Image 1 (cartoon, one colour):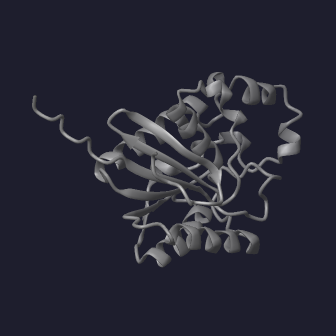
Image 2 (cartoon, rainbow, N blue to C red; image 1 turned 90 degrees about the vertical axis):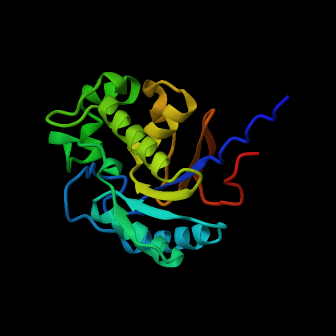
Length: 213
């Protein structure tokens, strides 16, 4: 009986949330330009770069086009001797008219309950729906998987797209994705292989294990 061919190695994607900004936890910044990392965020990015640089091999670094994501990706790429490639599919959700609003004010709106309990049915006024965001991020990761088959890539993005990618990889309904926590400069590791995705780590600050057992 002929031996079955050995399956190709998975593509490993390290999803890094950008570092802390001056408004993290207070404002819904969305895609508004001009928001840079705070001093704490820059230190977080340097620490993430140190952790990622200890991995055996990373082949590419991608980042959302927003400043805070590119500034987080820069020290990672520098440590790895790579350049940062801008990828629009990693962008933050388009919050439309809610962009720049204070979170404590948004929490008073009746729509906020829908955002938390029924996100799959919500569209930000003048912006993107959560479902569209999830389709965008999963499509982007699928394309990058094909372009980097069997390799390891870093993708610096934002909390909601990363949460949506984790939910899709786990087969979890989008309405439950708000239960996933993604902290600034944490690393979430997904492996995309022939049998489907594996979630190797979520919201991690220790990258001791990023390979499937």
